[in-house]
Image 1: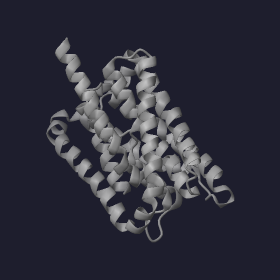
Image 2: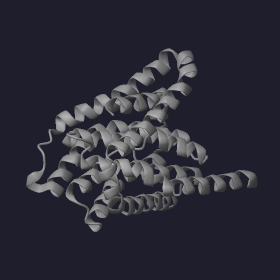
Image 3: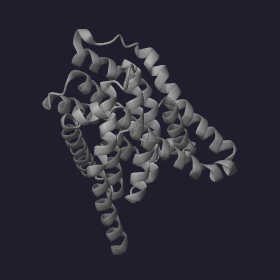
Image 4: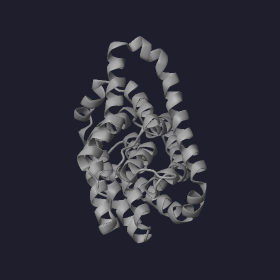
Length: 285
């Protein structure tokens, strides 16, 4: 799983250039809204959902682990298909992925103390931060270096690597489902509704916050998708790093596994709806 995550993040890095980071200065308002939603609103909504649905402690912790994860390659693909602002999506994913090396361990440590109490494992925030950095930022950085110095090779290899990353993501989810089917099936009706509600609320928050900030429809679509879509592969890996695995995946990984399935129940119709709006707008102009 860590290897699969590294390949996925490497494929993300192949699509990044320094200009993607400087785009923050060009679109400060849109980026600020998206960053605020991902860093603040997503954890707040996740905490509220875990509390209101009275999830078991380790599952609640897993929801918070998922909430600490940024968007990923799939959110960028969803924005592309929705005809949203893809450069903004890529900028948000890149920057929040870097920030998450700090925020994820801190949020996980606080959440473990809150939900598990005295039974919380000893989480070394520094070690977890280093692990997340090695599995996310290092592969992204390597991908950016290759893009900068061997662009022809990257142009030829990038489509294949992207397909490999997508295949690894599907394999990761499928393997997690098969190897933990009993636990998955027994937890689905507990976690599924909670995660669907979380996804719906975050999509709505993305729409509302973008509209209140006076952003364009394409930017609003991007903010909504980035707010409502977390990196499931990172969520599984981080959940694994927190409690380790002994005889199967720990419960902290189940929210990310189930979310990787349930998130698209609403996100796919949302993407199709926003694509239709974008197409009509283009025809009208």
